[in-house]
Image 1 (tube, one colour):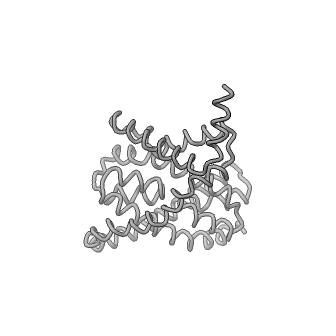
Image 2: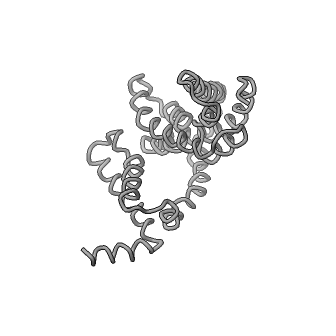
Image 3: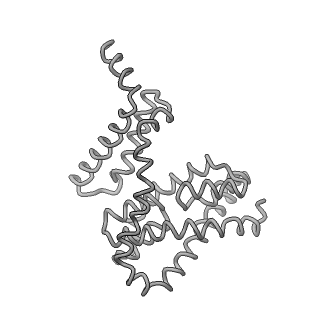
Length: 240
């Protein structure tokens, strides 16, 4: 037992440990996901988050220690986001044809995501700071944190809401679209990207490249539109 403890102490100080652990857990989750006929609850992104958080808690590893090793994955988020332009370019003709409905869906989705969150917060008598932190919960984390700070919310709390929204959207989104018999990949992808940002986009790419392209478009546009609309809505609602 002492030998195992000494080995763990040594490995825990190695930066590449948590990068390796992250990749192994995700790959294992992906294999399990495919072998069990792709059940939504076992999406590899979601299972990886749960397993990693559990592992960090059990080993008493601070997040900063984990991030020192896994930051290479974080670095790749930038190139991965830029790379979303490649599949989107392939469907640029279809996007041009759908410009009007895409614009309408974007505005309605952005308003619905913000107003529904704030409305539920009011219903449960949440504090003003919590409401302001909740307002940008449907956009990707970096933008949401900036918006929350601008309007007087708590960026750290906003991050929690954003992650929860992404997980919930990735879990319920595909099944909801199936229930509504929506089969068009462009519509499914745009809906997932609009409602569940990064996790929704990852889920869309698992369905189809076209769905992933439109999800990436929705995620980016919703971030820009919400960043403009939220401060305006906050003033109109008298929250600051």
